[in-house]
Image (cartoon, rainbow, N blue to C red):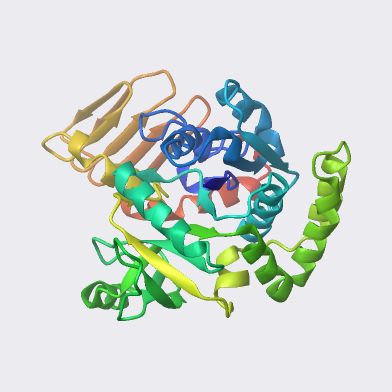
Length: 358
């Protein structure tokens, strides 16, 4: 199976560790190496390196090339980020250029999977369904009423797929309020939307021709330049005029193509914030629920997350539910319950012209 790994995004909720020059997907967040490397390694039983396409920012090509210098992975550099629809469209035309006629898995580079065997099994099942020309998403089986994720609502009855269940998708739902999220969990008919899709390249491009004609026109302009020395300049010209739009909003909310969901209980986390990383590492916490990374000393603290990355000792006294992240040039102190709002600090830094810290 071909795979397109989407390496865009700035990871602002992981500031100050994540920056524009080195965002979250290039950091060792979970302790097992850079997240993009983890993602590519995870796919190895299903995808050969020659079938693996990374779509990343131009400024990150050098670092990615060092990570994969001994592997024959294809890398495409977007001159500017335009969200997931252009990213997936670029990946689709390149996969077709490489000879792919079967299913392609499109997935983010910065997610954690606790059970890779289950994940690959479900991804493979999605590929078997997508061969027929449908779009298939891998829906994450929820284990709590989460308000920070979008949801996928399935039809009541499964389709016949042999081993394992798959369902027609009824609708994609935006992030809900807590009461509604509790209801979603109780019905058993909703899954978290992890942004993982499987489809043939021609299926993706047909949908873009119908729903995003401007994007499709740009991709067709780019197509003859693939594999030539005109590719980089043509890509920049095309991307300069493209609208930034997500695949979910631009395609999935309005598609009339058959759409299916394969449920997956694979221990998924988008590791979208320091709070979600703390939740992922609860087994590493001390008896008071404190999690420490680096040279940190905690006295009379509870449910504190301290990440000392700045090469100095960080000492904390009497903190409750607090987040402390220390780097060489910036220190973050926050309420853990406000971890989703850290991007507001990044915006404040931009407004003050402090782009050296962004």
